[in-house]
Image (tube, rainbow, N blue to C red; front, top):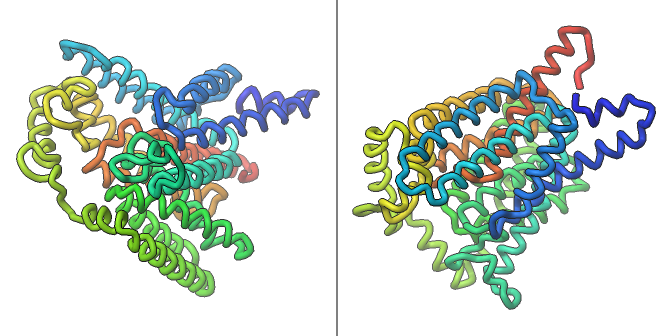
Length: 415
């Protein structure tokens, strides 16, 4: 229990409750700001550095359930520090590792803050949805040049919202879209219009990002969630509801896609992006050729070659999270990253179908992490803020489960 919540038992209960409420609101605000990273350092970094320090100074604890995540992320970054030693010109290398350490701390912070109060999961996802809807609207308006200067929200004629890259913008939208889908499938019908409206805006944002990774991630995540819900819910009526609403949502999205394709600008870029192998993927020193050469090169450099060194040797960055781990964090970082990812997926898989208040949030985060692991073969997810949030959610839910089991063992009540 953190010092903030510990004070709630003191005589000044209203003040302590207000302080706890303010702290939870700041956590949600931090998640909201993660959707607006058009320049760096972004407001997200400035807020999170301050509030992480304050929360831990006020007594936020890292439990035994969360400690392995902290240890793995620290070892991963030790690999990054060791890779700096082989660089002849450090340049921005130390800053890159500093950002990696900061993001690692955010992941541990989210896990600890969720264990401290599972009600924060709802706040986190609602803030994420708000950020996703707003940044999607910016990307859509920018794509169609709805106002002067709107092109700041696009890159290479692709929507990027308030992000620097469409390939980060698109995947950022997937978890909040799943949250809205889950609400549609399991919630009250009276709330459906608002969820449908938000989902359509986000889906259009994903589409106009023209990120093939985001498209694949969106499709995989939606199908995976429906499949898990069908496994979890045993009643025929509920299964029929899920199937009906899923089909309805699919039809609506197809209609939106058909309407969008009526615009020549959308149509031409869409059919260009649907080609499986682009010009920059194949050929000499294309994406896949760089992957092959990079993996062979990494076998000769156990400490890595240093952050951002790969792009100085080849035309572009690694665009592969496994190769990125090898080049930037060395063999130590690579093994640690795989260990952390497998451990995270095991936690989610083990708890996936257990009937708990936090099960929907765990399910969404787990599905999206699997999807991110897959797209990591063609894209670099290393410094994606929302990926570290997803890690924190899964580990935080795992910590909640450990507490629940201990309470039940000692005759307490489940949260």
